[in-house]
Length: 66
Image (cartoon, rainbow, N blue to C red; front, side):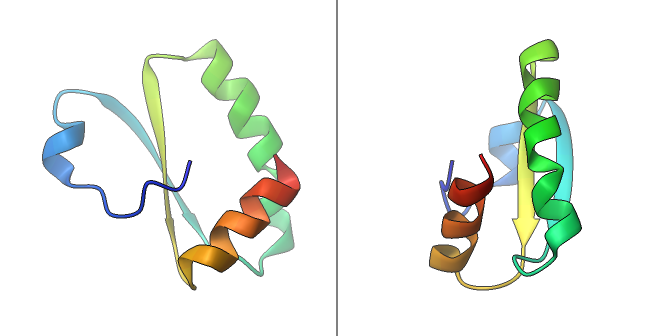
């Protein structure tokens, strides 16, 4: 969680689910619980969140809904 910048080269050849988010969007925050379940079932797939806002704000929101 919260690695910060990630290059596309790090993901080359991997299965990736891109999730676009806004930290103030309530609906998206609730679905993170489903992402955790999904990741347990599809552990070979990386889940990468692309989000607006400040990193501190995003990390706090993810922590609150994990």
